[in-house]
Amino acid sequence: MIEKIGDNEFRLQPPLTDDDVMQLKVGDRVRITGTVYGARDAAHKRFVAALDAGEPLPFDVKGQIIYYVGPTPTRPGRNVGSAGPTTAGRLDPFTPRILEEGLKAAIGKSNRGEEVRESLKKNKAVYFIAIGGAGALLSQQVKSVEVIAYEDLGTESVKRFQVEDFPVIVCDDAYGNDLLWDGRRQYRDMSKLDGYTPSEKMVISGG
Image 1: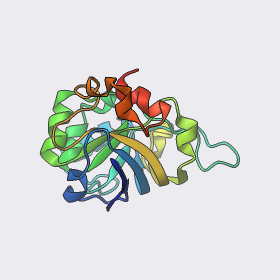
Image 2: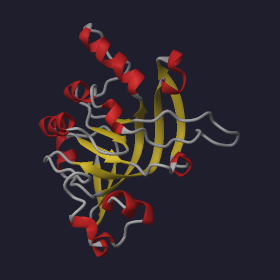
Image 3: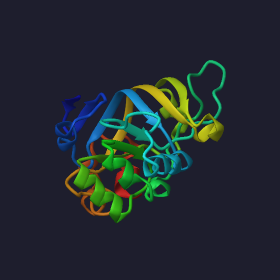
């Protein structure tokens, strides 16, 4: 489900449809509420191995969002430890295969490779960036977390998060546009970034 809440601002609640995704453009600010799945490269390697073997994935990825994260141990009084994003390029070898299964969005930091960008376009999916280095702040938007698969991987086990107003920015949309590769020249004029936080401005402009 998608709801427009301002100029270039949306609220999302998974599961997402093609129509939801096609409303998003690079640079849009998005708040996610609901279920998000956490998985990093070790888990993705197992995902692809399972698909190659004709086995089901630990959860149905259709319409869902995967956050590239391995949170630190939970501190007393918190729902989760620091939950900052992982560099997305580490997941590039596995991402197109998961997108083909119906995944609609991923969250990480830094840019994606050409094959992933083409796969996002083909499968009507998006890639969001979260603010790297802000893991402690992002964790405040996580209301609960549970391990659902691959517990032996420790911090890289597959997790189900319940989040509220989790802030991200559209980096790659389903039209083939890429904020980090193509959009930085557009946003060098910082006046175009009015309304963004200082951290968001730094990510978008490449500062």
